[in-house]
Amino acid sequence: MRVVHIVEALEGGVYSYFKDLSDFFGNEEIRQKKETTIIYSGHRNGVDQAKVNAEFSTSVQLIHIDMVREIAPFQDLKSIFKLTQILRKINPDIIHLHSSKAGVLGRTSSFLLFRKKKIFYSPHGYAFLRTDISNRSRKLYMLIEKSFQRIFGGTIIACGDTELEIAKEIGPVKLIRNGVDISNIRQYFLPHQNKKLTIGILGRITAARNPELFNKIALRFPDFDFIWIGGGEEAHSITAPNIKITDWILDKKTVFSTLNSIDIYLQTSLWEGLPIAVLEAMVLEKPVVATNIIGNKDAVVHNKTGFLFDDIRELDSYFEILKEKQKRMEFGKNGFERTLELFDKNQNFRQLLALYQESFSAARNPQK
Image 1 (cartoon, rainbow, N blue to C red):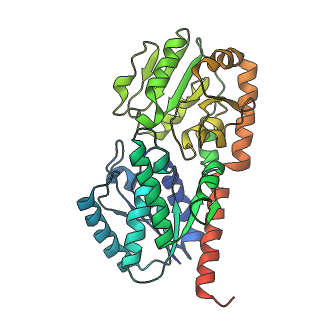
Image 2: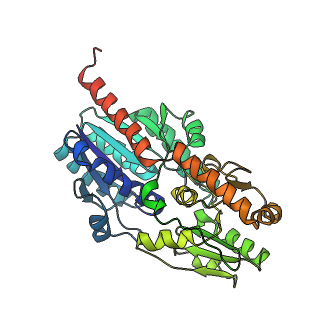
Image 3: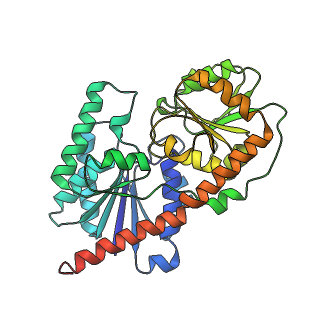
């Protein structure tokens, strides 16, 4: 069975997802029967071909092509042409598309093969949920999603429970939650005590992460230390004197050690699929305070593993509660137990593998 994954946005949480995917499907036992190829575009901050080649499993074939995030007709046509060439050469049994842009380019390329292929599509956060674009653009993205699903078909794979409910309105859908490498992350867990309560976030400093809100929160709580683990084009939005920006950290060991050093994880996102960074923080037993949006609320259980908020004023009471070390420890342990139950990448990739096998067997034995 040959499986091809196509992804444009190979960065942040999606990068972590694919690194774990390559390790799982590059396992010797699995790769003897399942051949995996990842076609990706690496034109994102902190991601390049050398990094991907160094960190991804050598048992998985990696192919880099140029793709861009926004709608760009000329570049998109070039990408479709190149994808079609590659897919025709590989002749995969299954094509799995990741992110909205790959969903469009990959479905079109698959159609141009003029051979019926089983298509899976993981939105990882629908583009029409973005709040940094106009209503007109969101409606256009919604139209594209529905139209391509209707014309080209395929099965949607939702990465979280709320995305599942949204996807049901678009087409047939399965739920396979995002997961993280719990055993690897867990080795960086060490209890500690900061002199001042330290609140942090991990990820690119972009509109999606809402750095303006993170900055407002830091200004509202001047007695706390804040840290942004990462860098990005919206770093200029962060001006509070009690915020430290680490900039890009390419070494995962340093990332997890830094993440372990905070007391509370704060996710200020405007939109999400199911945020990998939140799951990583939960593995390290960090209580999570997060905006009450799709994705965040699939990871965080309010008043059990952390808090969800709609208004910054709610944080006055939430941070007051979390100033108590025992409460942070209680929430942290609850969060870790939740990752063990729902967000173990090995468990979730096994579900994906079973789905591939079921689809492959059905295609080979249509009479059954």
